[in-house]
Length: 246
Image (tube, rainbow, N blue to C red; front, side):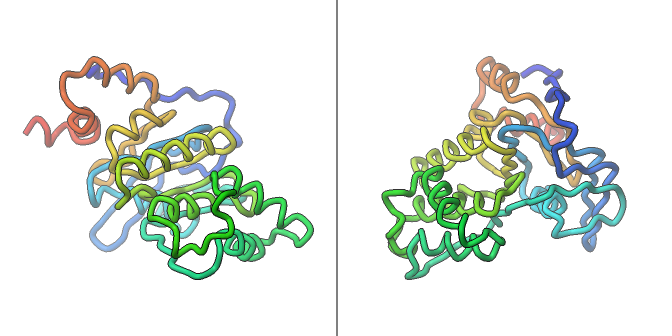
């Protein structure tokens, strides 16, 4: 692996939000430091060890947490899928979407069209009449990711959306997130080494409470193809080189 992963390009995305600058967040004994966060187009993978601060970062980006110090520019509309999101209900997928669209302020006249668009984009048209509790774990998670599209969000923040899924179901969710990221920025906190490198447009590592700069996905994939070890070893070298060399 080279030591000079190129930072993700600035481009002309200066209006994308949220943005963080010189942010510090203290929660008890834990401190998260983010010198700068710029939301970029496409799929951004946020990676790090357990307890590094990935979820705290997403909570800052969503506006759920206010930083102890620093500047935050919030996005106009952020939809969030938390790390623990389960829904076992007799309500159908389509009725759940209609309910959530109403909660998010989608007008009655526009609601059905928006629901159908979200179902189509999530690949759920054949399952729209199915009760949520009858769907497999993979399809339930697809429905939960798809509902994030309701309410015209400007960015999606997804925390460990493939946790507890088998390999096939997890890959299907990554493919869905990649497709959605063509329409709006998608930020995903994840532990998945191989998939995160394969699918991301850029990657941000969080290590020991410090948020790094975005690295270009194409260059990471090139370095991984040249590496002798596994994707897991490659990612660990990237996010925690001190521990690998100890």
